[in-house]
Image (tube, rainbow, N blue to C red; front, side, top):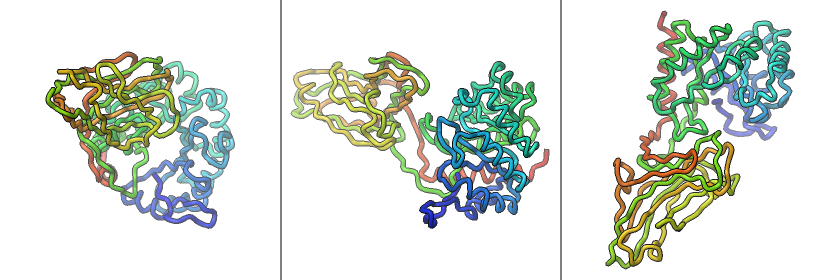
Length: 423
């Protein structure tokens, strides 16, 4: 992730702070940098006029990283990727440290990037600079023989973001072996991308331990000559404290890219014991969801007593990832009873095709009745149910408020180690 200047220039834009970004890259022993053209209209000009010369002086190779139509758009040429190919190639002729260009989420945009169009844009670049390389971003399930038979001749390699697991890095080596063997058969190189910040579908940002483990596996594979290199996704270079919520909580989840039907749900419930002598019955808890205020009318957060909805709120009504305290008077729903079933539910009033969501509940406090495992630390107390593709589970996240700095330091130290080690 680039560093931006603190104040806007005369055009009103906070431009890329080239000296600060280069200084951080050198401190972290980065030898190749993927420069994203996206966040400001000035990014392309900043790259040409300021960043490329500075990177060249610092001995840092650069790849231009563009976004596809689904993330539209990299400016100034938008979705005219043939023009992008030509302009990047022209820039590479002026700066020999510009080694290639990459396309994010390539496989999700194949209606644009047909084999013929991919051949055209790569050929346009190579007519100007035959050495300029083109790598699309391809995820772990994108390396099928049919896809590669159609596209391999128009690519130079692929960037593989490891998204299979964001908590444990144990599977990185096996994934690299499988994908590298597949690409080798087509004469293509491979670059591993390790997430150093939270991916949209992940529950939590990756820990420094996770990043270091994944990166070390990739660096070892690179040292053995099995892959071309490694990179990190959006490594923060200006550190901020991260807000820590509740380490233990309940998660109700609907995955991305999976369709649901109206009435599908996932829930966690239990039988509560009610004190008949209590004069007041109240439940207080904290909850958050992973979706920002936007599309409404699909996923709803609910609290139920004996199957009757007590609280019903659209996930689009709150800011994403903000813990909100809720308090409900349950007296009308439980008075006169000795027990009742209390449930939290994530409920779809309309079906979705690709709308992943996570609802978290934590720190229950009951007045007038007893709840088992109210802090979600035990293996008993809650019964999970679902209709459709969702899931419910207890979750534990050990938050590190200095995670950004610790991730950077882990990357820096590993890059330093592998720059001096000999095969």
